[in-house]
Image (cartoon, rainbow, N blue to C red; front, side, top):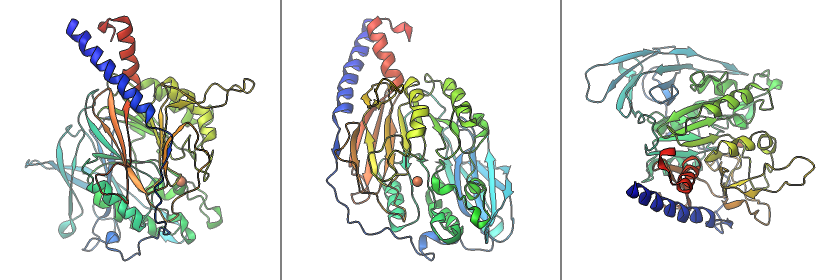
Length: 472
Ligand SMILES: [Fe+2]
């Protein structure tokens, strides 16, 4: 008992030191000024958009998690000329035993555009922590890729998530993806916080730009899951073009395992992966009280088992806290609805995009206001999430550079540069977040912070007060 108490004291002291670090690395507006050329989309004949050779060869191959706990994968691809095969052949590395899974086929029209044949194949019951090869296509246009399934969920499973948002398909987008791929940190799964192709910025929402984007990201998204969040550029609501159904191209092209999360919509869902529970929300669907999203989240937060998955991460496109002028306070209605829950359930970190820049908040909350008490200023709150805006993927709309002045006290670090991030979970108590800007080398961290898990941190304090480890 004495040894465990000693270990606990060391952990507590370490925790306190890291708490100070977490709190002290704050309040900076970076002086870095980017050479701000307008971000231009890569031309349609760029090599990154290359169509794979062969008649009807599968293209735009991408994967995402296919079940709730990580034993499933959804493989998606497009065949341009005819339906082709719906099946995926897969096998464990070095195994002779090949398995086949059957997928489904869909396609859609959008104004004057007709999509290719979009395939989605869910593979279930894979082994955890195992390398698999998989193949799509027929005959001499068969294409082969590989994936590594995540470890079985558990509290101390280390795992590294990448973070990219608002990517688009410019030269800057390409730099962001290259930096992510080339980083020594090595992301295992990418959390994508919305705004994918920006096809809707083109006349008639030119859906060919959905196809080029799918080919652009294949080099990474065919090999590791990208966890999807819908942004405003996925809405594609254009009744003037005869397209009144929101999210039509996105929902046809990017399937997610929402039914496994008891959700009724692919726009909000959850997954478990390694030591994290990830909740994906939709900023552009009904979220007021009694709406389907509200009712789902109310139940979902109760289900999260922090003993199994200590890290609770929320993704939503529109940030609840951002001190940039562009999109200022657009997340306010969502904040009013849900911030209280995020504090109550000790969400560790909320990642968002939308604002084309980078910002990291202190742990703050603003939930005391009741209309008459005047308490409407964010305060430091160790139960609250860190809010990270990472909408700096590099799309054609460019960076937002105008910031509210002075920098509000809730804002720890902000910088208008393109880049990407990593959430490197070490164990149940500690994770390390880092942000890389595209102008630096692959290994350079322009901003970073140690995150102490909200659930276990408070449990440790509780145990040290009571002196009784058995209460764990
Ligand atoms: Fe956006």
